Length: 133
Image (cartoon, rainbow, N blue to C red; front, side):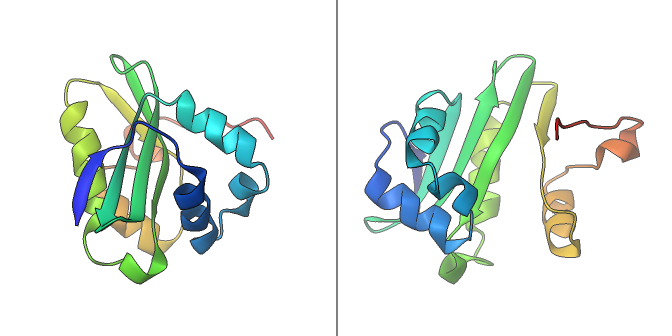
């Protein structure tokens, strides 16, 4: 497995990855997803040979805040350390940024994963988050 910066959006490899994890809200509007990639702060991709198997995409200013917008790994490659490796790339690149945030499903599996990488729920540090419905 190789991790490299993802600089040029290729719909033919990105859409199947998003579909494989069921993120159809993204794939229903592929042009919006492309624009999101093109305006992202930094994106890393994991490849097995020439196959895209994982991606992490961030937004923000890169100095005071980084928001991890997407972290996904193809189901057949999950539980092999790819998500952790992608996250470490981001955490290393933005090690001086005070706020690195993300939103995710509130399940034991996702909580354990992000806790293992040093993330805490906002409520654990006296904060809360809001999202426009």
